[in-house]
Length: 211
Image (tube, rainbow, N blue to C red):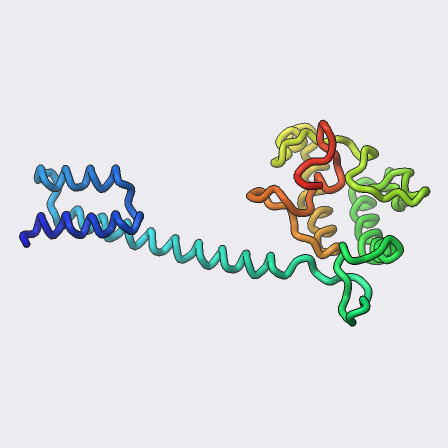
């Protein structure tokens, strides 16, 4: 087998692993056949390309595996002890247990956050901060029409443009605080599921993204 035939053979092996697109392989073979590129130089480039592919595939697998491990930890058991002797997850709690947990784990942090942001408006905070007057009749249904409706954009582009300070405060501080306190997954831009702004706010036509 001469060097050119051997080169074609290796290119086909690489292409069969889908590390190179068929278009790139076809071009490489045509250029090799025409003698436009020295065999040694071309394979040096291909080796670098394959090494980069392997590197990023490895990193991707590590990140994917870590994500699976992290996601398998949810929902976290953050509530009182249940009948089986283990802490309850948020979805397993009844309404009285949820109210107690909210008062202990959520309300103090949320009140402090809003008071530090706008003390003249939120010097005294209670459940109406998020639930509106409905909390007085034991109505804690979320998302709620009491809060401003959002644009429906899952990236919150319009909100960031019109109200950048408020939106960033909630995204960077309030949502992570709630995720931690409730033991839930944070909203994923990939799956468009999890706890995020649309867990409390309605979209233009009602609840969105599985809420």
